[in-house]
Length: 120
Image (cartoon, rainbow, N blue to C red; front, top):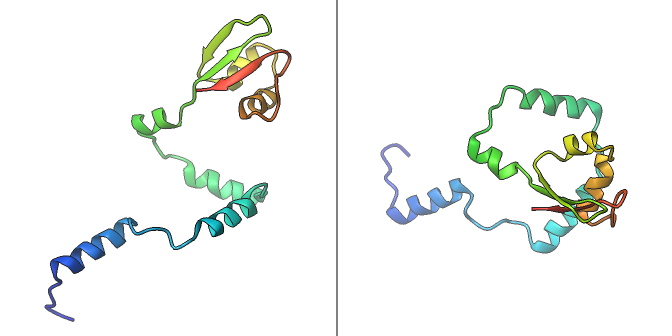
């Protein structure tokens, strides 16, 4: 309606709604079911290509880069510790399989060639 003014309470409710601050419409049971359904889902090559194209040209803020960066603490078979930022590069340089080292970090595998991993 033209010329209508909203009360302060209505404005507050609209603000909260627009910001997504109202609790999720899904129960924790429903969220768990949705999570289980999505695990192991395979994406088509076409879908992967579309996601890749959408991500091209985006720049990440320094704050975001810091948030997504991981620090790995690796322990070699002799007990020496290494703290690294790039697991893939480290594995390549030390003749280790990156996938196996990732499984070790996730707790799915105990060790790989005697190496153990902790993700910080």
